[in-house]
Image (cartoon, rainbow, N blue to C red; front, top):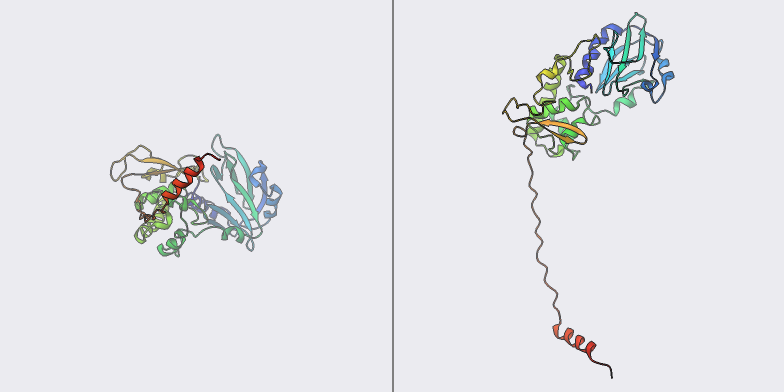
Length: 303
């Protein structure tokens, strides 16, 4: 799935080619692309000028007048092209612009979406903080994580907690911070939170410099490929030696997602919970002689 570095790379590639132009036509070949509103809803964007191309988390935004615009969510295999997509990828929609540019939306698995918003605010406020923003400090991240008693890997993937981080870069950031993916998010100490905040930012920035990771279906709009995956330490590297200690990288399943890690560099720190010992309860005294008299009485034959 295209994550923050891939979407940011696409944003930077298409922004100079469409900003200032207005949308002249939107052709939808596959109605599922425009679900749930339907292809007709996208027609409301025709005639509007693209004022800016923004990114929020993994969402790409073609901002028009006011707070309206088209939101592109690539999901698993979506891609945008200024040329015919590679063999095997089918074009699902085409956006035409007044400067003769055409942006083709292709998606092999048909999970990606194009959606027009009259007001973008309801979408944007649902997402967590941007990890590359200046106010994404270790203190701010610590406050957010302290409210979630879930594995830290799951917390990083939750777009309501932190926007933009996905499976690959969560693995890389956790490795760089030397934190096990199963560690509870609300139990990280101050030093671990500091390391993780720094590693998230550095991992994402390095990936953007390499134009994203073309592990599978990610393409640049000009048909090029990213190289961030060439520098991965653990993501998608099961069985290969850890670059730090030589231990084979392992993959575990966490909420139906793979989590790659080094078992030696990222040990799971188990916090011992004190065992509560129950004080012995005094036994209830029994009247043995009374029980014996009762038993004898029940055996005595009736006269």
